[in-house]
Image (cartoon, rainbow over all chains, first blue to last red; front, side, top):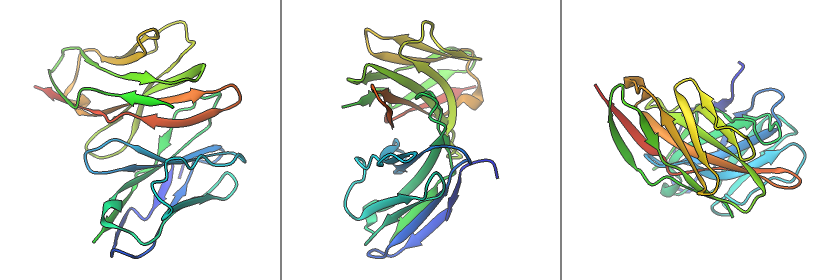
Length: 115
Length: 117
């Protein structure tokens, strides 16, 4: 498809398990972002990849969270030893980063529920 | 450090009226970009409008316009002739454009707009 693709769309897991969320950005988009959105709240920045530059990891809430990106393609967000407070929708977005004006194109999100 | 503030958690507006959603920001970057996004109850994020800090004119896109007041560090979204379909969460966002590269995009806490028929 032409848009940002995220999988799984829904994930229910038990506290303490590890989860992996995947994002396929729009082809050619150099920038990729992960955000967390808790129910009824705003978007919390997690991590930003821009081309071959070192990622901006300043938003990752703890060392249980990590993310990787292969070149300018797929990214995975991994949450280890999940906690109930990790329950949220995890949104991925990509952009062309045209001198900063490139708008973000969002995926539909991965809804994570930790029991 | 960058910060985006949306002080209106919720607003109710009569259909066909104009509405202004407030957004203030803080940044130390010499230039920056400001965005507005709409999130309906379906959850998708829809880009509405963009304003660059050095743009000479305020951005407009159809019924959306951005009231950019640089000295006040505000970037309010104005929706003219509101429609029932405008009911949604609205997020203001900002990206710093530093001397060598663009930085992450951060979002405000959002305003829930409800349009009354």
